Length: 193
Image: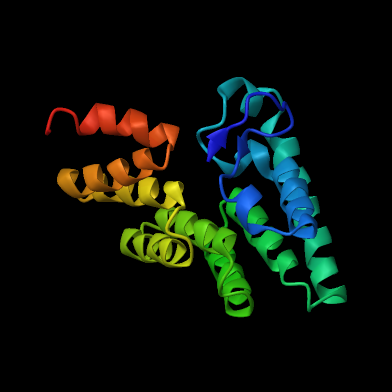
């Protein structure tokens, strides 16, 4: 993910956003990010996440969840609604339901990179790091140029105290011009090399 500082409506702009979605899917994700950006990632700018009282954010997400669930009942064939529901559940920190929902989505759309990113993030929240690595591996099998997947695997390898493995992951993401990987490589790997 890249921090999108030019747009006050979104904290982050997913790297995979431009590459993997049709126009209709981009609109759905954009709408979802608009609803969820305040809780979605801990890397958001502090001022953007604290400008609003937290209770209204939860209420907004819960209302959006109810609306999404109604839309799913009306349009069960629209699998993107499941992805949207999983994002909202993740934002509400309801990780088990989010995982169940994203698993249903990925059974319907097994080639969807956004789904694997979200499931990897959910698995990290559930402390299933090896499961998260498997999801990032799947992303790379679908598209070997997804720099953020290398970066996320590098972060997970650091948690396992595998600094040399993490540096290899950061190096690959760095070669793909992923800015966070460049910073992490300088911080953790230049001492080794």
